[in-house]
Image (cartoon, rainbow, N blue to C red; front, side):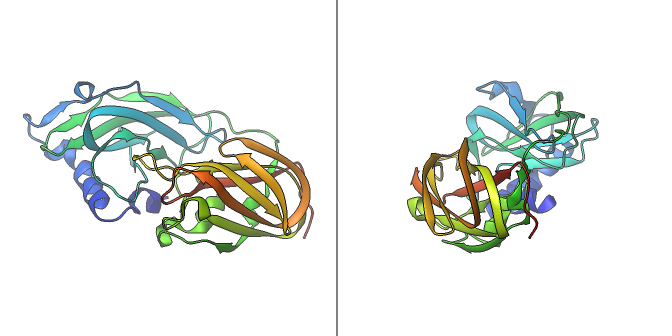
Length: 265
């Protein structure tokens, strides 16, 4: 789990380390209320599985922002934005992983501005949903990645789009609309639907708007990202191509291949 929070290199790694010790070492003059720079409501949206949640907030100044969280106010976990460029910015969307379903979590926002000011929020809480009972199977969790257009680095490998972990993601190396990834399910499977959850960057790039699906060499059509795409097909090898995007390091946080029942290999 920790690789997801520390995988960004360079400036971001430095920012994380500074933020980890920020409250303990800050002097009274530099420690300020997060309300001073908060430009939107804080929203926390847990995943339906109850194992992760995305926090979204805007700030009026650029800060290197993190969220510390845990089942009590000793916290113990930390998350930052996954952008590989790192540094300070104003649009924040860290993903909190390692959560348990049906559990209350305490969290606090911490941000460091370029002038050295350190902003800390009050402690807030959110509750994860109960673990779902039944529902479709995600066949992609057992799939093998058989190819990809490119990978930004080993920390953004294509396998991370099929690991069931919202804190990891696949990023291409600047492929834009030419990004693609292919998986092998091991045997023909009846597939009901596919969900392509796009990655994004704070500068507005890397957002996939639509993608196509090719099943055993037959193209099934173009579908909108971040929505359930009904396919109703039997196939073993699936290829996902970005059709339209905002360019840049396109990729996916998660690609789900859903079926009511799985066929034994």
